Image (cartoon, rainbow, N blue to C red):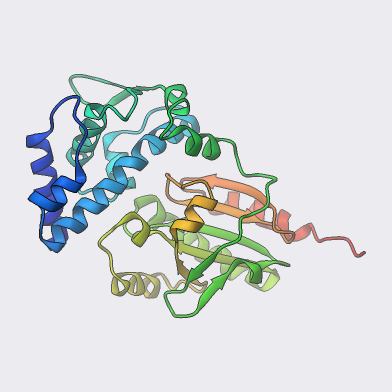
Length: 285
C-alpha cells in the first residue's frame, strides 16, 4: 500500500510539472523532490518502464497487428490504472530523445498508430527492437545463471541434454498469472519424459515492489514444482531485452531455441511443441 501511495505521488507530480519538449530529469527528481526511500523506489520503477514502453508498444504492434490499449500498458508495467500509463505516454511525447512514433486519439487518448520503422531507426531503441523482432527460432540459447528463490543457482548448462522451457514473467502480470497454472500442468505431464521448466521472475529487474515473501506465497499457492530464479540484467540483455510478459523460449537438447512465444500461450499449443521436441531425439554417433 505504501509503495502504491508513493507511486501515486510521483505520478501526480510528473503530471503537474511536465513541460512539452523537455526531458524528465530523473536525477533532479531524486535529489530535490523525492527523497524518501519509497518515493525513490517508485521513481526507479517508472524510469525503467519509461525506457521499455517504446519497445513494448512496437513489439506489441508487430505481434498482434494493433496498438496496445492504455489498460494493457498499465498491466504490462504493473501500473495501478490506465491513467498512470497516460502519464508515461505524455512523458515520452514530451521527451526529445524519444521519436514521435505514436499517433493518439485526442478524445480517448488511446494509441491509434505505431510507427515501428521510426523506432527501428532511433539510436536509443533501434538495436534492441531489431533484436526482438528478428526472432529466436534456430538460434543457440544464450547461457545464463540465476539465483533461485529457494537458494542455490540455476545454471543453463545443467539443462543441456534435455528439453527446456524458459518462462520469463513478473508478479502481478495478468497474462503471467494465467500462464503459470498451464505450465504447472504441462510440467506434471512431461517432466518425467525429459522436460525441464525454468521460471525466471523479473520483479527486481523491473524495479517492482514485490518482495520474496510475496513470491514465495505465490509459488506455494500455485504449487509450482519447477525452479524459480531471479531474472538478471545480464540474462535480459542476452535474450534481447524482453519487453512483453510473459515471454517463453523452448530449447531443444542441443541448446537451440526451437520456439519463441510472446504473451500468453495456451497449454495445447505448448503441449504440441513440447511433444514434438521430446520426440526429436539426437541420433547416436
